[in-house]
Length: 150
Image: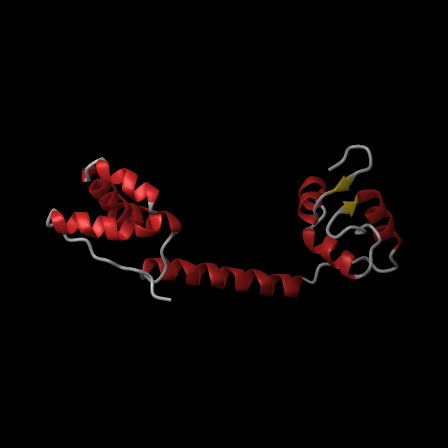
């Protein structure tokens, strides 16, 4: 918000700093309030002037808002159930799984390689897989080649 002209960058910012419900701001914009000249930016004096000049106050439709709340609660419960049942995983769990089961073993194998191979892999990244497979074959290591299929 600019202190000189009381313009907020977003409707959410205006709602949080003024206490005006976001739903009222959105409905006012939809009804053509001139306070929303640049997208979601809100000029507070223009909004207040327009809002109190309206013959009927822009009210919140409580039934509609209750329906939205009920729907949001249902979605939240469905997501919670998906996590509980193992059909959905949080990002932190996925990152931990990828690190422990993929990246950490790869790091250990790369650290075990002779330093002389590092220059070859860096110099020819397109041939890195072949260099690693050749080294693994020579050292009797089992590395699964999983090249992406187009």
